[in-house]
Amino acid sequence: MTALPLSEERDVEIALGATVLRGILGLVPASASLVVFVHGSGSSRFSSRNQAVARDLQSRGLSTLLFDLLSPDEEHLDAMTAELRFDIGLLTERVIGTTEWLRQRPETADMGMGYFGASTGAAAALQAAAHFTDQPDLVRAVVSRGGRPDLAMQALPLVVAPTLLIVGGNDHAVIRMNQSALTRLTAIKDLQIVPGASHLFEEHGALEQVSRLAGDWFLRYLVPSRPRR
Image 1 (cartoon, rainbow, N blue to C red):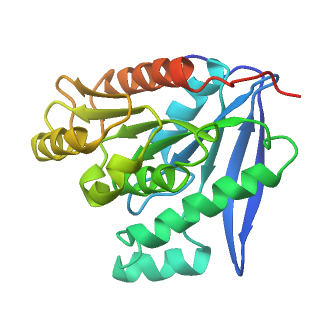
Image 2: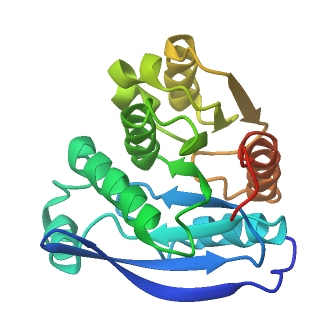
């Protein structure tokens, strides 16, 4: 991965009603764009794969937010029952609420945002993007890594943000799911298959390819329509 630039990382608490979510906000100086990471089932803001991609995006001038989709109490419940990690409706609400929370913070209020979703988190990211269809300058790009867009099929035609689907070449079932989802997307779209990679992109060089593809996509489409004030 590319070395981390001079960026400021801070722990944040995202208050959504009675629920408080924890996150890591990485602000790159002079950045006008921010990528919100939406992790997959059973993961958190400490996901080593998402942290690696976030650092690479920061090195390319993009600010990032990694955050927990569940509160500590919910994480404890989910660890025992696994009942919340597949609640796409709940996860979507958390992504929407976090996006609105970012709009209220002075340092991020004017930033164009993108979503980077992984596994089931990609479905929540796509449904959240569909929610903001009438605000196309807010969510400007979506990238899915090994995602499950099939869990958001009804929302896909509503997504207006350019969307990139990235799948491992050995992840055959998920390839088929993403190919089907691609036909439902009506926005600018692309499907990239990383040869030899499995679902978690643990193979040598696979995650670096994900970071390159995601970074290129965000730099192409996650561009402010006007300079920040």
